[in-house]
Amino acid sequence: MKRYSASLLDPAGTRHVELRVRTKATWGSDTSTVTVRSRVRTEALLSTSVALHLRADAMRSIPSGSVTAQITPSLHEVTFAVAPSGEWSTSTFAVTRSRGDKNVVTHALLAGRAMTSTTVNRKVYVSVSTMVATLLLLLGSFIVSKSSSDRTVFADQISIAPLQTTDSTLEAPVTTLPAPTIAPTTQKFSVLPAKSEFPTMEPQTEDELLAGVPNDGKTWIVIPRLHLRMQIVSGISDDRLALGVGWYRRGPKPGTKGNIGLAGHRTTYPAPFFFLDKMRVADSVILIVRNEMHRYLVKANEAGEPYDVVKPNNIGVLAYLGYDSVTLTTCTPIGTTNERLIVHAKLMKRSPFDRKN
Image 1 (cartoon, rainbow, N blue to C red):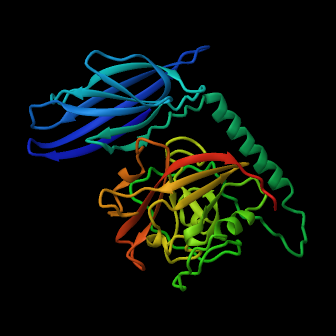
Image 2: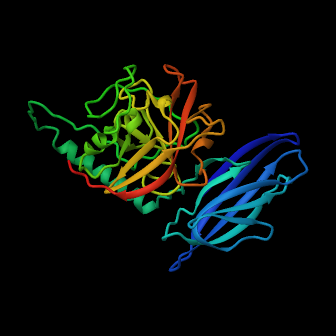
Image 3: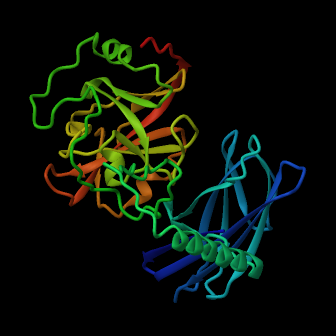
């Protein structure tokens, strides 16, 4: 189950909106049922409009009064009203899943901004027999250890390998855009050193960067304007961003549909986004995913600029933009973590890519 929450301040007063979303797949069918419990606590007398983005091939049914719109062939938006009673109300949607994807609900939006989401994990119950078995195992280990205590074991050196963190490590829900620091590593990158002189982009820059993408099966990002070629790693924690550009695992995975969120250091090694403010409208942001090249072009904001500056808690910039996109995030001003520099780029083309190295 997912929980969504957000507050909205308008002339009618502050509205505190909460959603509880549960998705259930029908056995042996491509149909899923989405049950939404919702309430709004407010002194306002008007209903509050909430929208859900559903990843599905088709909408099978929606409650009376709801409005649905097809954003893409596999993404639908359902808008419904929540009464200002403060009591929980329930709505149910039936959908045809997209290619069997059980992750039906991608975002909940209030006034066009993504609501904060958390996932409620299922409770784990341990049976009495399991507890007894565990106690017997511990007792047996103690007896074996006791019986061998008279033995003397000599060893020149015992080395214990450090615990490795895998991409399946759970992350806490993203509530702020990251501002991490970490020591350098020995990973090889193609990136301009922080605070170096910014060179111009030559016609051959893109080809040279793409030629250096290794044949390792991993996902890479290439930004010709920044003379950047770097591996994309899963996660945005300090240790992950020391290895490359980090992917927000709560959002779409690189190579999939939606708004792919990527984060990178501004000054701390390897500082891939030190020159992110040098990006221009229509510049290329290229993702190499397996043997495909996904080319995105930087979009201008309402003022015609290639980037925005937002507060760290404005995670709405990672919400779905109405088209497949990638969003680059880093700290600003340089040397601080006060705000975040944001660049949006729209997917324009997918094409085969031959990894030659």
